[in-house]
Figure 1 (cartoon, rainbow, N blue to C red):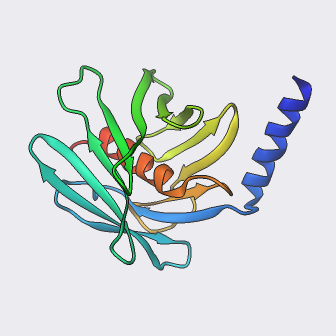
Figure 2: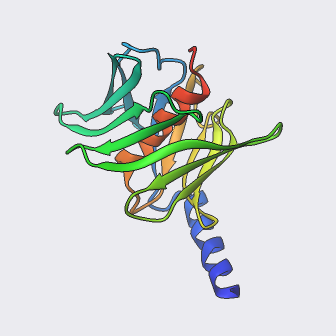
Length: 182
C-alpha cells in the first residue's frame, strides 16, 4: 500500500514537472455543431482537426490528423437519461464512454469508461476548464486555462505513454456536454 502511494506520488511529480508531458492548445466555446477547429501543440502548430457534424439528433465530432485521417470520433448517445458520449478509434471500434458521474456544488466528477483498460476519473472544475484525469490517483492528463493568456483558450497536458487521441476526444466530449449551448 505504501509503495503504491509513493509510486503515484512520484508519477504525479514527474507529470507536474513536465517530464515527457505533451501540451495541446484548445479553443473554448467553439463546440457548436458545424464549427470545425484545430487542436494545436504548444508551439502553435496544428496537430488535430476537430470536424463537427450534424447527424440527426446526435452531436458528432471527428478528430483527424494533419493528413486528414480520422483518429477518433466522439458521438452523443441520444435518448439516454444520463447524458454520455461514446469515443471510437480511427477504425470505428468503441474505445471509451464519457459520462458525468456525480454533480456537487463544489466539483464535477466525470468517468471515462475504457473498453481495454481501467476507468479514468475526471475531477475538478469542468466548467472553468480546470480539471485532472486520473487513473487510481495517478494523473494522466490535466486541463487548465492558466497556461495561456489568450481568452477562450485552454491547455490539455497528456502524460507520457498515454492514448493521446482518446484523451483529446474525451476532452472534446466533456466540453461539449458541460457547455452544450456554446
